[in-house]
Image (cartoon, rainbow, N blue to C red):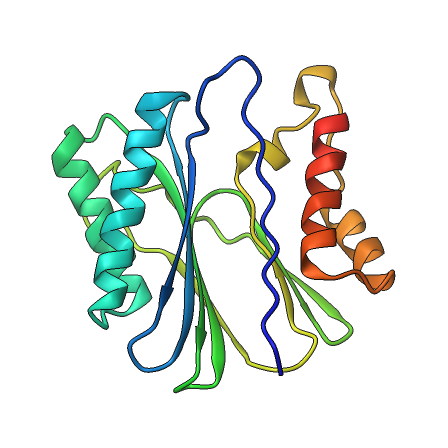
Length: 199
């Protein structure tokens, strides 16, 4: 079994820096966690927020703190740091070799798509962004680690693509089409970003 990870990113139009931050951490008991944070607003201020939140989550995961607890602690930190006036979205994807599972934690209104065998799961339960109040909990889902399991995580740049023109990306349909073509993780990631940019 191997883990493939595809990452695609582009700057927001006319903005010097992206508010998105992606970090990896090897889990103390084996496995890997990927942390994706999108800071509120855009440009340097958003990047500072996302860097701080991602750094906090990664440091806690490195100490063996569970994903849900790390997300709650990062939210409380942001709330105290910015008095509840600034938010950030957070996704944590963890491949846990102790439980032989994949854990998806969301503090993000954007859904996560999970292809498991023939079934496509849309993880879209309500999930509050970090920083608005104390003790915000993530929506957590767990799947057995198996060959062919494919998970798509993204920030609101994908879901908002085309909104100003009244268009909307069919992320589920596009994801299914790309999977059916037998593409690798990076190819799928690049194709989805390209479709969003075109909208």
